[in-house]
Each structure stands twice: as C-alpha cells, then as structure tokens.
Image 1 (tube, one colour):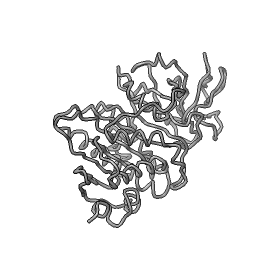
Image 2: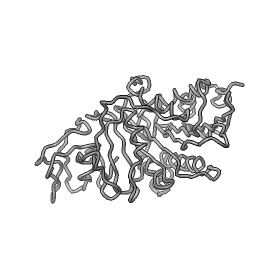
Image 3: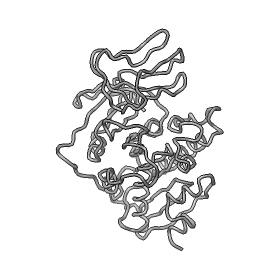
Image 4: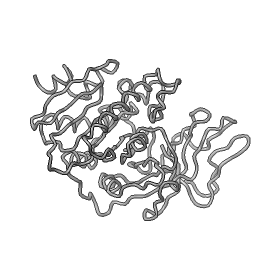
Length: 361
C-alpha cells in the first residue's frame, strides 16, 4: 500500500484529504518514508514528520508550520501542502522534527475566515470558556493545543524551548508592506536575532512587537513552551487555486532548507526590514463609537500628526507627536473588541524589549 493510500485513503494528498473530511474525526495512522522517517497523521489536518535521529548529530529545533487558522487564508496552506508532497515523494530527507497544521478545515471548505468565532483569539486556553467550548472553532483550537503539547513534550529529555513556530496567514485587506511578522510578548524577552534573520531572508519586510498578553496561536506556543513563535502575514487573501505561489518562493525555499536541517542564506543585500511598535490600540467603546478610517484602507497606511482616527460621545484619538501607521482596521467589530492598531516606526537598532513593545494582531 502506498504512503498516500495509508495516510489519506482515496484522497490525492494531505490538503485534499483535509478538505474532503472536514467534518469527520480521523483516527491516527502512520507510514514510513524511504529514508526511515515516520509520517504520522495524528488527526484531521495535523501531520507530523519524525525523522530518524542520530545519537551524535546536533538536533535542530523542532518546527511547527501552521496555516489555515483562518480558513480563507489559502496561500500558505497551498505551499505547505507542496512541501508535504515533496517529502512524501522522497525528494529529500527531513532532518527537522516538524508538525504541519491546517487549522480550520470546515472554514477552509466554505472559504470563510471562521465558522462561529475567530479561532486566532481562542488559544491559551480561551477555547474552554463557556462561550466557545461547544463551537466548531473552539473544539478545533482545543485539539490543536493538545496536538502541539504532544509534539513538544515528546522531547526525550531535550530542551522543550527548542521549538520554532511560524503561524502563516494572509490578510483580508491590501497592505503597503506585503509581508510582515508579529512577535508575541513574554516579559523581558527579546526576539532571537537568528529568527529575525531567517524571516528577513524569506522576504519579510517588517516586524511588529507585542507588549501584552494575547490569545493567538503564536502567543500560545511562545508563552506555554518558550518557543520562538511568529504570526507571519504574507499578503492578500485569495481563494484556493488563485494564489501566485511564486510570491512566496523565498519563504518556501527557506522552509525547505530548514526541513533538511540547514539554514538559508541572504536573498539580497538590498533587502531592508522595518520595525514598528504600537502607539495606540483602537477599541470599540460602544458609546456611539465611530472609526474615521476608510473601509478599504491598506495596512500600514500613514497618518500625519493631527489626524482624527476615532471618536465617541466622550473622547477621541488624534495622531500626536509623530506620524503613525494603522494595521488591522475593522469598524465592524463589536463593543469591547479591537477595531485597529496604530503604530510608530522605530529604529531597528533600538528595537525595545518586553515592556516597551506593543500589542498586535
């Protein structure tokens, strides 16, 4: 029986199997690759590559590659599926223990961001809240958290913090900066320069640094396991089959290198990376709240000093001191929810640590 038949029944590959069985529970199954590595389908959309480990070799950090936490963000799902097909085809040997996660299969099928609740707000145990625990998205977040725990904690005495997690997304709106990465907050921690280097080599052009706790997937792996985790935004949402995957060649090739146990080389000496911190989190106050931002505005649009950003019956916010940029504006969120984030550009060489960084995504 072929590896694909063993793992995916009659489906062509991992992605097809995930979509065709989106509402089903899948029992764990496994197969062995030609080089002796194991490939394990733990649950629907959750696939582990467990390479044969040498007792003398230096073990690279474990790798978690997640996509489709929002079901309509298809480009990273597609290029991760390409990598999985290459591995199954025996095009190269994987040296890095890797967990692939396609986050929200039911939302993927219907091309929507989520079913009932934004899954990327349900991690760090939030899914157990009574509001979410019985929902499709909440139950899926719980399954993903358990799968990650099993993957990371099976370390055979190794340092559990030697884990890299890239949660791959695309955005619902255009962006002045197409590819940017968001670093979760842990008090007193600075981003590992090698991680920033890897993302810069992968054509990421900006970093946003968090300063307070969040309940995103990348925050969960960072806070719970000390993983070097990033939410990585990679451009605009498009339906399956309509993505220009060549736009992701740098990241795909560098992930391929990481799977092989190597480290990528610089793409271009001219590539420059910008750093941003948050200056203001926009919250819908519910008090006749009005967001004075066009609905079709791009992420990282710049606003001059004095610009009115939002107001309600009692207060307002204007840009002060220096020009600011907006990301993730959304006037349709409910009271108490984030309606956008204002940023300030900072010197890369003076990127602040922990308490000076700011809440994002």
